[in-house]
Length: 405
Image (cartoon, rainbow, N blue to C red):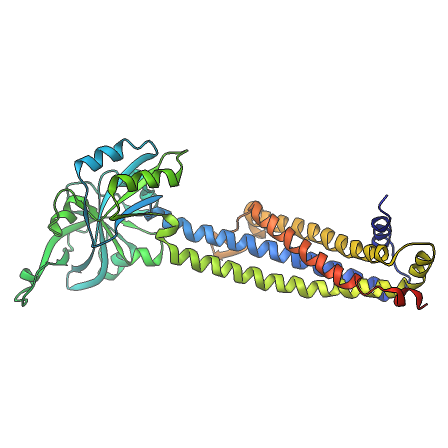
């Protein structure tokens, strides 16, 4: 039998004759429970917010995207196409042409749009249909476009609004003095057939159009593109497919996954998550000072008992272990209770009745996500901090303290 552990369990279950020590112990336990529950809830809430934010990028960003390392475009040869078609890990891919454009409609101008010419496979690569709020998706070999809410509102046109003239301009390449708008810009007249709603930034930026329309607008060759968007097969290994695509397209092409396409966003979210974790870990550390105080008070209260144990042969090291185990058990049990409470509250936000939920807007509950890694992170945090706190308190026991009764 592990004697120090047995005594530690007895001390943990029993009440002290001193009510002040009982109160301090209860406060320490409640502090651990609240701190642990708070850390779990915050990590779950941020995980939900992170997933909620990143779901918008999956609408316009594919699993893999090939872009040129130099310049704005590259040539996709027939040989490249045949080799890409033979890569088993690719479920579908879409050719894309992107360029900044200037939009004008009935005297109103919008200078900061990006036109994205896409082929017929684009809808199979990204889930663009899910964000079309009004109208429908464009058809190939037409002058149809689909714009975001921001652009639609700024230029005051709607879906199939034939009364509104929509002109898209892009500067012509070349040198020399500009003598007229016609000589300076390539122009195409378009009709809007759909409005998408993703997020404010994308709504204010993108105009989707058939790839041949953008091809003609930019005077591109039929096989000249800006990027290729890839959707992977269900069980495909991303790194393997990425290497195969690189071997086909050459060293002048960079293959990026979704995280690399949004590296600034991912870095920002990861930094914020780390900051929140550190802040709430600090709160846990403060709560564990109560554990240290509780153990020290318990040591002082049990001096006579400890002296008796010492006289019958229990070593100072074993007596230290008693209070080390007591503090560790208090931290672990409090942590488990806190995680359970946090899990229940997060579950209520996910699956509970409407009146239990916290809403960002009248129709949008605050997003939360239950992840196994958060259970592990919180449990390891409280375990490590609890063990350190118990060690700090228990090392105060020495021969002088035990014998000075």
